[in-house]
Amino acid sequence: MKLTGKIAIITGGGSGIGHAACVLFAREGATVIVADRDVAAAQRVASEIAGQGGRASAHQVDVSRDAEVAGMIAKAVADHGRLDILVNNAGYGIAGTVVTTAEADWNALMAVNVNGVFLGCKHAIPVMARQGGGAIVNTASAVANVGIHDRAAYVASKGAVAALTRAMAVDHVDQKIRINAVAPGTIESPYFTRILSGPDGAELRRGLEERQAMERLGQPVEIAQAMLWLASDDASFCTGTVMVVDGGWTARGDRKPKIER
Image (tube, rainbow, N blue to C red; front, side, top):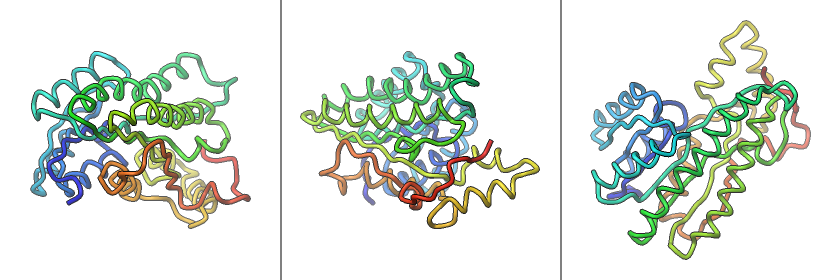
């Protein structure tokens, strides 16, 4: 029970890694606010947690909108009196090079993947500072460290998350706020389920698995476990860290750069 008595917000909590993190954090004793743009998905996760004896509530939020993020943080404090943990997990990816990516698509992705982290921290940090500390975990990506084919906007956004994590960690260490990030590799998530559902799905899966040193895709709970460690007191000497959890993908010199369309 690493998070007993803690109040945690997890964005993008309605599916994939966020879902796994919400369930795991609740099992470890946290009261979890499942935040997602899809409120029905958030409610399903909150109900799942309640069914397991945990404490959770659903909150609808578009993390790209300042007023909605501010309202989410304010409601957590109003309901629970404090906010101990924020996991900025909401995000998505699009295909395209800088030539083929439309400006509107670039801006929309940056608004969620980068601005969402900025806004979450902007509103959570003052709360945590007043109460004497807290922990923030951002979701970056292994592609913050390497370039991949046909994902220019996504790679840029996750590189920004990694850099922002380090900058904020330095700025707020004196307020006893630890700010870290987890950098997942290729994870069995709804995003990849959609990609692999087409006629070439089996071939694409084989390609994705072959590029992993462990020759398999990661599972959402494996990323959630890393988030749990970073959010818990076990990581008390850890801030400004971007923890890569990618099955050895970026460690391989022979990885194939071209991936799914």
